[in-house]
Image (tube, rainbow over all chains, first blue to last red; front, top):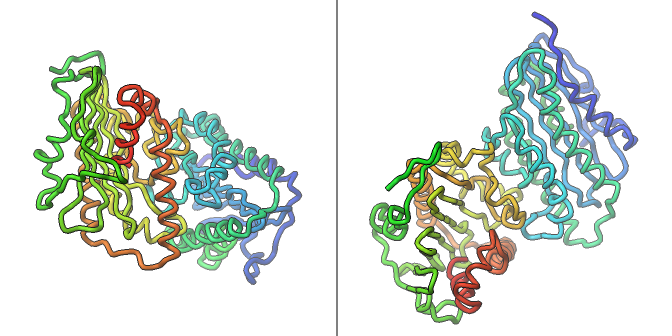
Length: 244
Length: 264
Protein backbone atom coordinates (compact mmCIF):
# COMPACT_ATOMS: atom_id res chain seq x y z
CA UNK A 1 0.00 0.00 0.00
CA UNK A 2 1.52 3.32 -1.04
CA UNK A 3 1.90 5.95 1.61
CA UNK A 4 -1.11 8.21 1.91
CA UNK A 5 -0.64 11.94 1.65
CA UNK A 6 -3.06 13.29 4.20
CA UNK A 7 -4.29 16.87 4.03
CA UNK A 8 -2.38 19.33 6.23
CA UNK A 9 -5.52 19.84 8.32
CA UNK A 10 -3.88 20.14 11.75
CA UNK A 11 -0.79 21.93 10.48
CA UNK A 12 -2.74 24.72 8.81
CA UNK A 13 -5.12 25.19 11.73
CA UNK A 14 -2.22 25.30 14.19
CA UNK A 15 -0.45 27.90 12.09
CA UNK A 16 -3.46 30.16 12.54
CA UNK A 17 -3.86 29.31 16.22
CA UNK A 18 -0.21 29.74 17.19
CA UNK A 19 -0.33 33.55 17.60
CA UNK A 20 -2.99 33.05 20.31
CA UNK A 21 -0.20 31.84 22.63
CA UNK A 22 -1.79 28.55 23.56
CA UNK A 23 -0.99 26.92 26.88
CA UNK A 24 -1.38 23.17 26.84
CA UNK A 25 -3.64 21.66 29.51
CA UNK A 26 -3.05 18.39 31.39
CA UNK A 27 -6.35 18.27 33.18
CA UNK A 28 -9.97 18.98 32.33
CA UNK A 29 -13.03 18.56 34.52
CA UNK A 30 -10.83 16.98 37.18
CA UNK A 31 -9.57 14.34 34.75
CA UNK A 32 -5.99 13.72 33.72
CA UNK A 33 -6.11 14.09 29.93
CA UNK A 34 -2.43 13.33 29.31
CA UNK A 35 -3.08 9.74 28.13
CA UNK A 36 -5.01 11.17 25.17
CA UNK A 37 -2.10 13.32 24.03
CA UNK A 38 -0.57 10.40 22.20
CA UNK A 39 -1.86 6.89 21.94
CA UNK A 40 -1.47 3.87 19.76
CA UNK A 41 -3.51 0.71 19.51
CA UNK A 42 -3.28 -2.28 17.14
CA UNK A 43 -5.87 -0.56 14.94
CA UNK A 44 -4.83 3.04 15.00
CA UNK A 45 -3.04 5.95 16.52
CA UNK A 46 -3.81 9.52 17.37
CA UNK A 47 -3.81 12.40 19.80
CA UNK A 48 -6.18 14.93 21.28
CA UNK A 49 -5.06 18.05 23.11
CA UNK A 50 -6.63 21.00 24.85
CA UNK A 51 -5.14 24.43 25.27
CA UNK A 52 -6.00 27.53 27.21
CA UNK A 53 -5.60 31.05 25.84
CA UNK A 54 -6.71 34.58 26.55
CA UNK A 55 -10.54 34.80 26.39
CA UNK A 56 -10.63 31.09 25.51
CA UNK A 57 -11.68 28.34 27.89
CA UNK A 58 -10.26 25.64 25.66
CA UNK A 59 -8.99 25.10 22.17
CA UNK A 60 -9.47 21.42 21.42
CA UNK A 61 -7.79 19.77 18.52
CA UNK A 62 -6.90 16.26 17.55
CA UNK A 63 -6.41 13.57 14.99
CA UNK A 64 -7.05 9.85 14.84
CA UNK A 65 -5.84 7.53 12.09
CA UNK A 66 -7.89 4.38 11.83
CA UNK A 67 -6.25 1.35 10.15
CA UNK A 68 -4.45 3.75 7.81
CA UNK A 69 -7.75 3.92 6.00
CA UNK A 70 -9.45 6.94 7.52
CA UNK A 71 -8.27 9.95 9.37
CA UNK A 72 -10.63 11.74 11.75
CA UNK A 73 -9.64 15.27 12.60
CA UNK A 74 -11.46 17.85 14.63
CA UNK A 75 -11.12 21.23 16.24
CA UNK A 76 -13.48 22.97 18.66
CA UNK A 77 -12.87 26.30 20.31
CA UNK A 78 -14.84 27.14 23.43
CA UNK A 79 -14.62 30.78 24.55
CA UNK A 80 -14.59 31.81 28.20
CA UNK A 81 -18.02 32.34 29.76
CA UNK A 82 -17.41 36.09 29.90
CA UNK A 83 -17.31 36.30 26.11
CA UNK A 84 -20.27 35.75 23.85
CA UNK A 85 -18.20 34.69 20.86
CA UNK A 86 -19.55 31.76 18.86
CA UNK A 87 -17.91 28.34 19.11
CA UNK A 88 -15.59 27.43 16.30
CA UNK A 89 -16.50 23.91 15.17
CA UNK A 90 -14.58 21.95 12.57
CA UNK A 91 -14.92 18.32 11.57
CA UNK A 92 -12.65 16.63 9.07
CA UNK A 93 -13.13 12.99 8.08
CA UNK A 94 -10.63 12.05 5.40
CA UNK A 95 -10.60 8.56 3.96
CA UNK A 96 -7.54 7.26 2.15
CA UNK A 97 -9.63 7.21 -1.00
CA UNK A 98 -13.08 8.60 -1.62
CA UNK A 99 -15.03 11.54 -0.27
CA UNK A 100 -13.89 13.80 2.52
CA UNK A 101 -16.65 14.72 4.94
CA UNK A 102 -16.04 18.29 5.91
CA UNK A 103 -18.07 20.57 8.17
CA UNK A 104 -17.20 23.94 9.58
CA UNK A 105 -19.31 26.46 11.44
CA UNK A 106 -19.44 29.14 14.07
CA UNK A 107 -22.09 27.91 16.52
CA UNK A 108 -23.97 30.93 17.93
CA UNK A 109 -23.79 31.24 21.72
CA UNK A 110 -27.31 32.67 21.91
CA UNK A 111 -30.45 32.19 19.84
CA UNK A 112 -29.71 34.23 16.69
CA UNK A 113 -33.38 34.83 15.91
CA UNK A 114 -34.15 36.31 19.30
CA UNK A 115 -30.90 38.28 19.45
CA UNK A 116 -30.60 39.92 16.08
CA UNK A 117 -27.63 42.02 17.17
CA UNK A 118 -25.77 38.77 17.78
CA UNK A 119 -26.64 37.41 14.36
CA UNK A 120 -25.46 40.58 12.67
CA UNK A 121 -22.21 40.66 14.61
CA UNK A 122 -21.27 36.99 14.61
CA UNK A 123 -23.07 35.21 11.78
CA UNK A 124 -23.58 37.80 9.06
CA UNK A 125 -19.81 38.27 8.92
CA UNK A 126 -19.55 34.65 7.76
CA UNK A 127 -22.16 35.12 5.01
CA UNK A 128 -19.56 36.00 2.35
CA UNK A 129 -17.78 32.71 3.08
CA UNK A 130 -21.04 30.81 3.12
CA UNK A 131 -21.77 32.20 -0.33
CA UNK A 132 -18.22 31.65 -1.54
CA UNK A 133 -18.27 27.96 -0.66
CA UNK A 134 -21.68 27.34 -2.21
CA UNK A 135 -19.73 26.00 -5.19
CA UNK A 136 -17.63 23.57 -3.17
CA UNK A 137 -17.72 20.19 -4.91
CA UNK A 138 -19.90 17.69 -3.08
CA UNK A 139 -21.79 20.35 -1.15
CA UNK A 140 -24.69 18.71 0.62
CA UNK A 141 -26.74 19.29 3.75
CA UNK A 142 -25.46 17.53 6.82
CA UNK A 143 -27.80 14.57 6.94
CA UNK A 144 -26.15 11.92 9.07
CA UNK A 145 -27.95 12.94 12.23
CA UNK A 146 -30.56 15.58 12.95
CA UNK A 147 -28.98 16.46 16.32
CA UNK A 148 -25.77 17.41 14.51
CA UNK A 149 -27.45 19.45 11.81
CA UNK A 150 -29.66 21.03 14.45
CA UNK A 151 -26.67 22.52 16.24
CA UNK A 152 -25.36 24.24 13.14
CA UNK A 153 -25.94 27.89 12.40
CA UNK A 154 -27.54 29.10 9.17
CA UNK A 155 -24.09 29.74 7.70
CA UNK A 156 -22.45 26.37 8.15
CA UNK A 157 -20.53 24.81 5.29
CA UNK A 158 -20.48 21.08 4.83
CA UNK A 159 -19.70 18.81 1.93
CA UNK A 160 -18.67 15.36 0.84
CA UNK A 161 -15.76 16.44 -1.32
CA UNK A 162 -14.70 13.87 -3.90
CA UNK A 163 -10.96 13.16 -4.09
CA UNK A 164 -8.74 10.83 -6.05
CA UNK A 165 -5.67 9.06 -4.61
CA UNK A 166 -2.78 11.50 -4.59
CA UNK A 167 -5.06 14.42 -5.39
CA UNK A 168 -3.98 17.09 -2.92
CA UNK A 169 -5.68 19.96 -4.73
CA UNK A 170 -9.18 18.71 -3.90
CA UNK A 171 -8.14 18.21 -0.29
CA UNK A 172 -6.80 21.73 -0.05
CA UNK A 173 -10.00 23.04 -1.61
CA UNK A 174 -12.02 21.20 1.04
CA UNK A 175 -9.72 22.52 3.75
CA UNK A 176 -10.01 26.15 2.76
CA UNK A 177 -13.38 26.89 4.46
CA UNK A 178 -12.01 25.57 7.77
CA UNK A 179 -9.17 28.04 7.60
CA UNK A 180 -11.24 30.97 6.38
CA UNK A 181 -13.93 30.47 9.04
CA UNK A 182 -11.16 30.28 11.64
CA UNK A 183 -9.64 33.54 10.43
CA UNK A 184 -13.02 35.23 10.86
CA UNK A 185 -13.35 33.72 14.32
CA UNK A 186 -9.90 34.91 15.36
CA UNK A 187 -10.74 38.37 14.12
CA UNK A 188 -13.88 38.33 16.27
CA UNK A 189 -11.80 37.13 19.21
CA UNK A 190 -9.44 40.07 18.89
CA UNK A 191 -12.37 42.49 19.13
CA UNK A 192 -14.22 40.61 21.86
CA UNK A 193 -15.22 42.48 24.99
CA UNK A 194 -16.61 40.90 28.17
CA UNK A 195 -20.39 40.52 28.32
CA UNK A 196 -21.93 43.30 30.36
CA UNK A 197 -25.51 42.04 30.60
CA UNK A 198 -25.85 39.26 33.18
CA UNK A 199 -29.01 37.88 31.54
CA UNK A 200 -27.16 37.55 28.25
CA UNK A 201 -24.22 35.90 30.02
CA UNK A 202 -26.55 33.30 31.50
CA UNK A 203 -28.01 32.60 28.06
CA UNK A 204 -24.52 32.14 26.64
CA UNK A 205 -23.56 29.71 29.38
CA UNK A 206 -26.81 27.80 28.95
CA UNK A 207 -26.52 27.43 25.17
CA UNK A 208 -22.89 26.34 25.34
CA UNK A 209 -23.79 23.82 28.01
CA UNK A 210 -26.45 22.52 25.65
CA UNK A 211 -23.90 22.06 22.86
CA UNK A 212 -21.67 20.13 25.20
CA UNK A 213 -24.53 18.04 26.55
CA UNK A 214 -25.91 17.24 23.09
CA UNK A 215 -22.51 16.22 21.76
CA UNK A 216 -21.77 14.00 24.71
CA UNK A 217 -25.24 12.47 24.68
CA UNK A 218 -25.45 11.70 20.97
CA UNK A 219 -21.87 11.52 19.78
CA UNK A 220 -20.38 9.29 22.50
CA UNK A 221 -22.28 6.15 21.45
CA UNK A 222 -21.41 6.82 17.80
CA UNK A 223 -17.72 7.24 18.59
CA UNK A 224 -17.67 4.15 20.77
CA UNK A 225 -19.45 2.19 18.08
CA UNK A 226 -17.30 3.30 15.15
CA UNK A 227 -13.82 3.74 16.59
CA UNK A 228 -14.20 2.81 20.27
CA UNK A 229 -12.36 -0.47 19.87
CA UNK A 230 -9.70 1.01 17.60
CA UNK A 231 -9.11 4.05 19.78
CA UNK A 232 -9.53 2.29 23.07
CA UNK A 233 -12.60 3.07 25.14
CA UNK A 234 -10.69 5.12 27.72
CA UNK A 235 -9.10 7.27 25.01
CA UNK A 236 -12.45 7.71 23.28
CA UNK A 237 -14.05 8.92 26.52
CA UNK A 238 -11.17 11.30 27.18
CA UNK A 239 -11.49 12.61 23.65
CA UNK A 240 -15.14 13.48 24.33
CA UNK A 241 -14.15 15.40 27.47
CA UNK A 242 -11.39 17.22 25.63
CA UNK A 243 -13.38 18.16 22.55
CA UNK A 244 -16.83 18.80 23.98
CA UNK B 1 -50.11 22.78 -21.91
CA UNK B 2 -46.52 22.04 -21.01
CA UNK B 3 -43.93 23.57 -23.32
CA UNK B 4 -40.45 22.05 -23.35
CA UNK B 5 -37.72 24.69 -23.32
CA UNK B 6 -34.39 22.89 -23.44
CA UNK B 7 -33.89 21.22 -20.08
CA UNK B 8 -36.74 23.14 -18.44
CA UNK B 9 -40.46 22.99 -18.94
CA UNK B 10 -42.85 25.90 -18.94
CA UNK B 11 -46.26 25.51 -17.35
CA UNK B 12 -48.96 27.84 -18.62
CA UNK B 13 -51.05 29.79 -16.14
CA UNK B 14 -54.21 27.84 -16.90
CA UNK B 15 -52.42 24.59 -16.06
CA UNK B 16 -50.93 25.78 -12.82
CA UNK B 17 -51.89 24.17 -9.54
CA UNK B 18 -55.07 25.50 -7.97
CA UNK B 19 -53.76 25.29 -4.47
CA UNK B 20 -56.97 25.69 -2.49
CA UNK B 21 -58.67 22.98 -4.50
CA UNK B 22 -55.66 20.69 -4.08
CA UNK B 23 -55.54 21.20 -0.32
CA UNK B 24 -59.25 20.71 0.26
CA UNK B 25 -60.17 18.25 -2.46
CA UNK B 26 -57.20 16.31 -3.84
CA UNK B 27 -55.35 15.95 -0.54
CA UNK B 28 -58.42 16.50 1.65
CA UNK B 29 -55.96 17.65 4.27
CA UNK B 30 -58.49 18.79 6.85
CA UNK B 31 -60.80 15.83 6.53
CA UNK B 32 -62.91 15.39 9.65
CA UNK B 33 -62.30 18.94 10.87
CA UNK B 34 -64.93 21.62 10.81
CA UNK B 35 -63.17 24.75 9.65
CA UNK B 36 -64.88 27.96 10.71
CA UNK B 37 -64.03 31.17 8.85
CA UNK B 38 -62.46 33.82 11.07
CA UNK B 39 -64.44 37.01 10.54
CA UNK B 40 -62.38 39.36 12.66
CA UNK B 41 -58.73 38.97 13.57
CA UNK B 42 -56.73 41.21 15.87
CA UNK B 43 -59.56 43.70 15.64
CA UNK B 44 -59.61 43.70 11.84
CA UNK B 45 -62.50 42.74 9.61
CA UNK B 46 -61.18 39.89 7.46
CA UNK B 47 -63.80 40.25 4.71
CA UNK B 48 -61.49 42.19 2.36
CA UNK B 49 -59.13 39.19 2.37
CA UNK B 50 -61.77 36.63 1.65
CA UNK B 51 -61.91 37.42 -2.05
CA UNK B 52 -60.20 40.37 -3.66
CA UNK B 53 -59.56 41.73 -7.09
CA UNK B 54 -57.44 44.66 -8.26
CA UNK B 55 -56.32 45.49 -11.83
CA UNK B 56 -53.30 43.18 -11.83
CA UNK B 57 -54.19 40.64 -9.22
CA UNK B 58 -56.95 38.58 -7.71
CA UNK B 59 -57.22 35.98 -5.02
CA UNK B 60 -57.86 35.37 -1.35
CA UNK B 61 -56.34 34.79 2.06
CA UNK B 62 -58.87 32.73 3.98
CA UNK B 63 -58.30 32.17 7.66
CA UNK B 64 -60.05 29.55 9.72
CA UNK B 65 -60.23 28.22 13.21
CA UNK B 66 -61.25 24.68 14.01
CA UNK B 67 -64.63 24.18 15.63
CA UNK B 68 -64.29 23.00 19.22
CA UNK B 69 -60.53 23.57 19.32
CA UNK B 70 -58.50 26.10 21.30
CA UNK B 71 -55.04 25.00 20.15
CA UNK B 72 -55.00 26.43 16.63
CA UNK B 73 -55.00 30.21 16.38
CA UNK B 74 -55.57 30.13 12.63
CA UNK B 75 -55.20 28.12 9.48
CA UNK B 76 -54.64 30.37 6.49
CA UNK B 77 -54.92 29.32 2.86
CA UNK B 78 -54.10 31.80 0.16
CA UNK B 79 -53.88 32.20 -3.56
CA UNK B 80 -52.70 35.38 -5.21
CA UNK B 81 -53.04 35.30 -8.99
CA UNK B 82 -50.78 37.88 -10.56
CA UNK B 83 -51.40 39.15 -14.11
CA UNK B 84 -52.47 35.69 -15.21
CA UNK B 85 -48.81 34.77 -15.16
CA UNK B 86 -48.09 33.47 -11.68
CA UNK B 87 -49.88 32.17 -8.60
CA UNK B 88 -48.52 32.83 -5.13
CA UNK B 89 -49.96 30.15 -2.89
CA UNK B 90 -49.59 29.50 0.77
CA UNK B 91 -50.81 27.45 3.65
CA UNK B 92 -49.92 28.32 7.21
CA UNK B 93 -50.98 27.04 10.62
CA UNK B 94 -50.30 28.99 13.77
CA UNK B 95 -50.93 27.51 17.22
CA UNK B 96 -52.42 29.50 20.09
CA UNK B 97 -50.12 30.87 22.76
CA UNK B 98 -50.63 28.00 25.20
CA UNK B 99 -49.00 25.51 22.83
CA UNK B 100 -45.40 25.27 21.69
CA UNK B 101 -46.28 23.52 18.43
CA UNK B 102 -44.15 24.84 15.55
CA UNK B 103 -45.56 27.24 12.99
CA UNK B 104 -46.42 25.35 9.82
CA UNK B 105 -45.41 27.30 6.77
CA UNK B 106 -45.73 26.43 3.12
CA UNK B 107 -45.38 28.81 0.23
CA UNK B 108 -45.80 27.41 -3.22
CA UNK B 109 -45.30 30.15 -5.78
CA UNK B 110 -45.84 28.90 -9.28
CA UNK B 111 -44.41 30.61 -12.34
CA UNK B 112 -44.25 29.29 -15.92
CA UNK B 113 -40.57 28.39 -15.48
CA UNK B 114 -40.54 27.03 -11.95
CA UNK B 115 -42.15 26.72 -8.55
CA UNK B 116 -40.51 28.57 -5.68
CA UNK B 117 -41.30 26.52 -2.64
CA UNK B 118 -40.51 26.72 1.04
CA UNK B 119 -41.98 24.34 3.56
CA UNK B 120 -41.10 24.08 7.18
CA UNK B 121 -42.20 23.67 10.74
CA UNK B 122 -40.67 26.82 12.16
CA UNK B 123 -39.63 26.20 15.73
CA UNK B 124 -41.03 28.43 18.46
CA UNK B 125 -38.22 27.62 20.88
CA UNK B 126 -34.46 27.32 20.57
CA UNK B 127 -34.06 23.61 19.93
CA UNK B 128 -30.35 23.64 20.69
CA UNK B 129 -31.19 24.48 24.28
CA UNK B 130 -34.42 22.48 24.27
CA UNK B 131 -33.20 19.37 22.52
CA UNK B 132 -36.46 17.59 23.36
CA UNK B 133 -38.28 20.06 21.10
CA UNK B 134 -36.28 18.90 18.10
CA UNK B 135 -36.88 15.28 18.99
CA UNK B 136 -40.62 15.80 19.49
CA UNK B 137 -41.52 18.19 16.71
CA UNK B 138 -38.84 18.07 14.04
CA UNK B 139 -37.41 14.58 13.97
CA UNK B 140 -40.78 13.18 12.77
CA UNK B 141 -40.13 15.09 9.52
CA UNK B 142 -36.76 13.45 8.96
CA UNK B 143 -37.84 10.65 6.62
CA UNK B 144 -39.81 13.06 4.40
CA UNK B 145 -36.91 15.52 4.40
CA UNK B 146 -34.46 12.74 3.49
CA UNK B 147 -36.70 11.57 0.67
CA UNK B 148 -37.39 15.05 -0.68
CA UNK B 149 -34.15 16.98 -0.25
CA UNK B 150 -32.68 15.56 -3.45
CA UNK B 151 -35.58 16.60 -5.69
CA UNK B 152 -34.09 18.50 -8.60
CA UNK B 153 -34.24 22.14 -7.60
CA UNK B 154 -33.84 21.63 -3.88
CA UNK B 155 -30.27 20.58 -4.41
CA UNK B 156 -29.37 22.58 -7.47
CA UNK B 157 -26.56 24.28 -5.64
CA UNK B 158 -25.99 21.44 -3.23
CA UNK B 159 -27.90 23.13 -0.49
CA UNK B 160 -31.25 22.15 0.77
CA UNK B 161 -31.09 23.32 4.32
CA UNK B 162 -31.30 27.10 4.10
CA UNK B 163 -30.78 27.12 0.41
CA UNK B 164 -30.57 30.02 -1.94
CA UNK B 165 -34.09 31.37 -1.87
CA UNK B 166 -33.73 32.49 1.71
CA UNK B 167 -30.05 33.21 1.17
CA UNK B 168 -30.19 36.99 0.96
CA UNK B 169 -32.26 37.37 4.14
CA UNK B 170 -30.31 36.23 7.19
CA UNK B 171 -33.19 37.15 9.49
CA UNK B 172 -35.45 34.78 7.56
CA UNK B 173 -32.89 31.98 7.65
CA UNK B 174 -32.80 32.09 11.44
CA UNK B 175 -36.54 31.42 11.57
CA UNK B 176 -36.21 28.12 9.73
CA UNK B 177 -35.72 24.67 11.15
CA UNK B 178 -33.19 22.02 10.22
CA UNK B 179 -35.91 20.30 8.18
CA UNK B 180 -36.77 23.14 5.82
CA UNK B 181 -37.38 22.24 2.20
CA UNK B 182 -36.59 25.28 0.13
CA UNK B 183 -35.78 25.72 -3.52
CA UNK B 184 -36.87 26.39 -7.05
CA UNK B 185 -38.26 23.45 -8.91
CA UNK B 186 -38.73 23.34 -12.67
CA UNK B 187 -39.93 19.90 -13.67
CA UNK B 188 -43.69 19.30 -13.33
CA UNK B 189 -43.24 15.88 -11.73
CA UNK B 190 -40.87 17.31 -9.16
CA UNK B 191 -43.29 20.21 -8.54
CA UNK B 192 -45.93 17.68 -7.60
CA UNK B 193 -43.52 15.73 -5.39
CA UNK B 194 -42.52 18.94 -3.61
CA UNK B 195 -46.19 19.70 -2.99
CA UNK B 196 -46.68 16.14 -1.74
CA UNK B 197 -43.81 16.67 0.72
CA UNK B 198 -45.38 19.93 1.92
CA UNK B 199 -48.66 18.16 2.54
CA UNK B 200 -46.83 15.37 4.36
CA UNK B 201 -45.28 18.02 6.60
CA UNK B 202 -48.77 19.40 7.26
CA UNK B 203 -50.06 15.93 8.11
CA UNK B 204 -47.25 15.50 10.61
CA UNK B 205 -48.17 18.88 12.10
CA UNK B 206 -51.80 17.81 12.45
CA UNK B 207 -50.71 14.59 14.13
CA UNK B 208 -48.55 16.54 16.58
CA UNK B 209 -51.45 18.91 17.19
CA UNK B 210 -53.74 16.02 18.10
CA UNK B 211 -51.24 14.93 20.74
CA UNK B 212 -50.42 18.44 21.98
CA UNK B 213 -50.53 19.44 25.63
CA UNK B 214 -50.56 23.00 26.90
CA UNK B 215 -47.24 24.43 28.04
CA UNK B 216 -47.04 24.33 31.83
CA UNK B 217 -43.65 25.86 32.66
CA UNK B 218 -44.12 29.67 32.85
CA UNK B 219 -40.46 30.42 32.11
CA UNK B 220 -40.45 28.18 29.05
CA UNK B 221 -43.74 29.73 27.93
CA UNK B 222 -42.30 33.20 28.23
CA UNK B 223 -39.30 32.23 26.10
CA UNK B 224 -41.55 30.57 23.56
CA UNK B 225 -43.80 33.62 23.29
CA UNK B 226 -40.83 35.94 22.89
CA UNK B 227 -39.48 33.88 20.01
CA UNK B 228 -42.94 33.61 18.46
CA UNK B 229 -43.51 37.36 18.71
CA UNK B 230 -40.16 38.07 17.04
CA UNK B 231 -40.78 35.52 14.30
CA UNK B 232 -44.19 36.98 13.50
CA UNK B 233 -42.91 40.54 13.60
CA UNK B 234 -40.06 39.69 11.24
CA UNK B 235 -42.35 38.31 8.58
CA UNK B 236 -45.09 40.89 9.04
CA UNK B 237 -42.80 43.91 8.93
CA UNK B 238 -39.93 43.01 6.67
CA UNK B 239 -39.63 42.60 2.97
CA UNK B 240 -38.40 39.43 1.41
CA UNK B 241 -37.89 39.24 -2.32
CA UNK B 242 -39.59 42.67 -2.74
CA UNK B 243 -42.85 40.85 -2.03
CA UNK B 244 -43.97 43.39 0.53
CA UNK B 245 -43.38 46.34 -1.78
CA UNK B 246 -45.31 44.75 -4.63
CA UNK B 247 -48.18 43.83 -2.32
CA UNK B 248 -48.29 47.35 -0.92
CA UNK B 249 -48.56 48.81 -4.39
CA UNK B 250 -51.31 46.39 -5.32
CA UNK B 251 -53.44 46.52 -2.19
CA UNK B 252 -52.39 49.47 -0.06
CA UNK B 253 -50.96 49.51 3.44
CA UNK B 254 -54.15 48.62 5.29
CA UNK B 255 -55.04 45.51 3.35
CA UNK B 256 -51.42 44.42 3.35
CA UNK B 257 -51.45 44.61 7.14
CA UNK B 258 -54.58 42.45 7.20
CA UNK B 259 -53.10 39.86 4.84
CA UNK B 260 -49.84 39.63 6.77
CA UNK B 261 -51.70 39.25 10.05
CA UNK B 262 -53.69 36.36 8.66
CA UNK B 263 -50.64 34.65 7.23
CA UNK B 264 -48.20 35.13 10.13
